[in-house]
Amino acid sequence: MRQGLHLGPRLQQKPIITLKIQQALKILQLPTLELQHELRQYLESNPLLEQEEDVELTEQTAVEEPSNDKQEEEVEAPDWSDFLNDRDSWESPRREREELERIEKTPVSTPTLHESLLNQVRLVTVDAEEGRIAEFIIGSIDENGRLTIEAEELAELLKLDAEKVKSVIGKIQNLEPPGVGARNLQECLMIQLRARGGEGKLPYRIVAETFDHLAKRRINEIARELHVSLENVQDALDVISHLDPHPGRDLAVADSPYIYPDLIVEKVDGDYEVFLNDRNVPRLRISSAYADILRGDKDRGDKTRTYVERKLSSARWVILAVERRRKTMVEVMKTIVDLQRDFFDKGISHFKPMVLQDVATIVGVHEATVARVTSHKYVQTPRGVFHLKYFFSSKIKTDAGSDASSKAVKARLQTLIDQEDKLHPLSDDKLGAILNDEGFQIRRRTVAKYRDQMGVLNARMRRRV
Image (cartoon, rainbow, N blue to C red; front, side):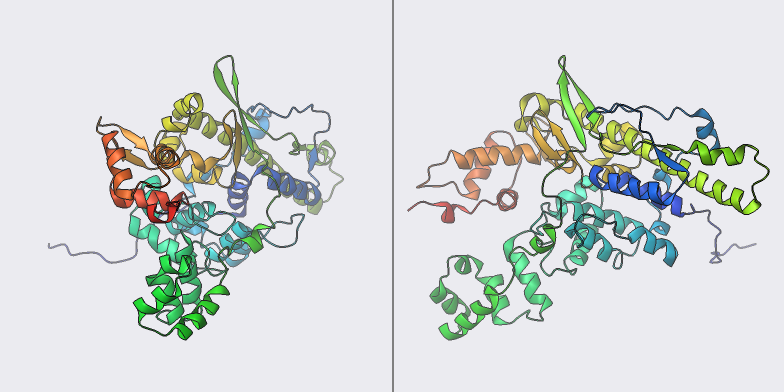
């Protein structure tokens, strides 16, 4: 009997994304200062939780596994790796989605730039993969609203197709405020003009086609190249002057006024040790007073017992989620230190290329877990304070057959530019030739891209007259 293609529905078992799982994912991603506030909210809303007052905490807290074996047996610790890559986490029922997207209270009343973008992007991403890409992109947007990573580099970090990444960047660039997610000033202005319906009009053409002249306010050259009158150019420049070159700043003021490191790396007896900087994070435990209700007090009504059981389950879950977060953060940072040991010992020129999957494989978690752990978190090290995403970079091939980090290449590029003859600065072609002579296999357009990311002008504009 001939078998045909069966197009009937298939039953597929998928993880159920409960509010508890969403809660665990949120706890995993929160930086330390926001976690403090979140846990105090839990303390206020759940009478089964209480704060340990008698535990002496140091600024650098070692991580231990939860000691309550019975608690471990009764409530399975949250394992978010099974859920991070499933679209249900982005398409949960309305009530759960609204809970997940709720902006937590902070000392200021307005959302931060990153919070605002995350809330908006959930309305335009269509699946879990786009959601993960969007989270990483938003985490790479600075306080000015500028994207600090190229699509190709991000695609290499996430091991995804570059076109998919570019598509998500395009969606983020359509969010508010206009101009956010641009990779340079020119793109920022073009995005704002497109948002106003100005694509193809003279202000847009000036930015798109004569940006170098615009930067120098060479009005005559602009008019000549675009074949328009000086009066029309002046009118167009007036439109451009009302655009915002830093579209993220108005929301960035809501961010913390200082960097609070979530982790600390110290060199002790020739080796590096990792600590959590969580001295002010509340230590939670189960309230013994309420727990007694479940130990055989028959005088309590069924409704009371049901209420306490529900709150007890929620309290245990929060405690375990926090412990898993602490353990995962330290393991991820230890792995980063191990993989980037040469950087910590010798400096930026010894930075190694590293992607999320490299760390995820060693730690034994999904790469999306690493992306969440490194989102909006900082580490204090002997070489300074860094965003955790700083340690990830794409690679450049070398003549020796090994790979060099793009950060190491940029560091060398900066050194060459700092040491150049200011009357005769090095062109991108010359910089590329020097780097290739030194063993880096790099093209001129890559040099230009890196230079632009570094905020360095081209050779003609660097020349000192």
